[in-house]
Image 1 (cartoon, helix red, strand yellow):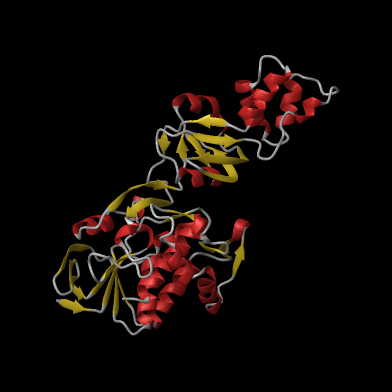
Image 2: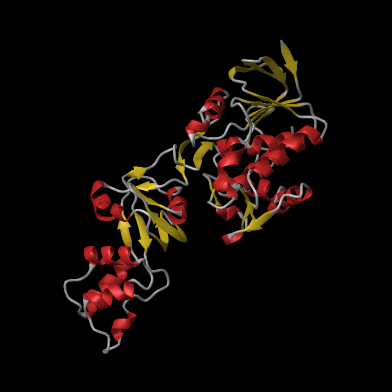
Length: 388
C-alpha cells in the first residue's frame, strides 16, 4: 500500500512535532513517522520529568556550532515568547527557575499533550512504531517502511542524535544525510559527566555527592555553576556545560573560589598562618570535606607569603585532564551532526537536495544546558514547517 502526503517527517520528538504543527496549519498533508511506540520520549524525561521547555534569555551565544551564526535566523523567527504563547494558550502552569529556565509546574506530559493536540487540530497524521527501511528520491521521496510505502515531495529529518540509546537513539539521520551527499561534522556526546583518571578518582571520588559552585573552563568557554563529585568523576551543571567544549587531550580548569581572594585573611598579622586557619578559610566557600581534602593534597609545606600566593593561584586554577566522558548513555544531547554549510539557515532545507530538510538535534547546533536545546528544536522545526 502506498500513502501520499505533502510532507513526511521522520521523528516525533520536539522538532518533528513543531514542524508538523506549522506545516499542518498551512494546509499541508503531513505524516509524522516515529519508530518508537510513542512520540516525545525525551520530552517526558527532560528536566527531571518537568521539561525545561525554553529559556527566556535565549541568544545565539548559547549555542555551539561549526558556524556560530547559523542558528541566528531560526532563533529570531521563532522566539521563546512564541513558544510561551502556545504554552499559555493551553493553560499549562509553569515557573522560572534560575538563569531564565522555564519548567512545567506539573509534568512534561503537559508539553507533549499540547504538541499532540496542536498536531491533531492541524490534521497531522502521527504514526508510531514505524521503521524506515529505505529512502529513495526520483521526482519525490519514496520511503519503504514496516507500514508500507510513503511518498511525498518534501522529507524532513528530525531523528535526533545518538544520546540516550536506550530510548531508541540511532545514527539514522546522519546515515540518511550521507546517502544524499551531505557532510557530517563528527558527532560527540555533549552535556555529559566527565570521568576522572584512576589517580584522580582515588583522590576525590570517595567524596561522591559533594557539590560546590565553581567556574569550569575549557577551550575558551567558561561556566559558573555547581560542580558535583560522582563515583566516577565530575558532573553538575558547570561540568555538563563545559563537557560540550571538551575534546581529548585538552585540560579542564576549575576555579574553586570564584571572585574570592582566598589568602586575604592572611594579610592580617593577627591571623595565624597554619593549616587549621587555612582549612577554616577554605570552608567558607567549599563544603568542609572538599576543602579539607583539597588542602590535604595542595597545602604548602610552609606558610610564607609566596607559598600562599601559589596556593591562591592553584585554588583558581585546578587543572585536570579527563579520562573521558560517560558517553552517549548519559549525554543529554549530541554535538556535531549535519554540517550547517549544507543547509539554508532560513528554512533548514538542503542546498543540494530540494525538498530535503534537517531540524533539531541531528543538525550541528547544540545548546547550552537550561532549555536552549528545546528552543532550537522549536525554532528549527517552525522554520522548516513554514517552508515545506
